[in-house]
Length: 229
Image (cartoon, rainbow, N blue to C red; front, side, top):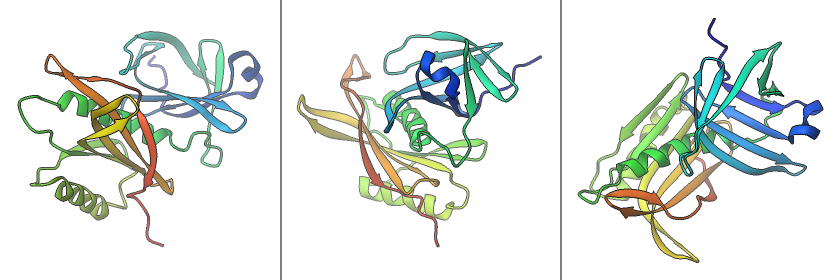
């Protein structure tokens, strides 16, 4: 028998929070996993992971600091057990990390972007879209960055009713205390949230490969997915 998939949002059940701490987990059908630690005021930290289900184990890795881990799991009586820690499904009215879906697709876009950087040619901006059970990626080829962004937004507006989450990625730079860095920049929006995010991952080319240089930078950003009244 194939174990039930853990796709969805889960939170540690109240009776296990004293022993295991309070946290929530988002598993997407596309292999993204966002683990959010929670405190009295809300989210206190996030781990952006990827996962696969192998038999009765969930195999995770962290692209920013690769380290494969295996965790036994089962879903029983509507609860997800990760080892001995039980989680219940979160309903739409009790979502503990409303930005989790944006971090999930944003992390996937950053990973794809880092793999697309090349010393031999320009970076091609792209739009990643989750709609139902499909994740699509469209490369945006134009003469300027402004035209590329406009083209990506136009596509989102034309497909507005079906787009759930989207991420537009382009190559730029950021200036931090440590200095000025090339960066993969990603504008992320979720149809369920009024605000979007912009994520910036500083990188440097080493041996023809784009390697992360500092932690991910995050700011609020206007959403692309405002629904008409």
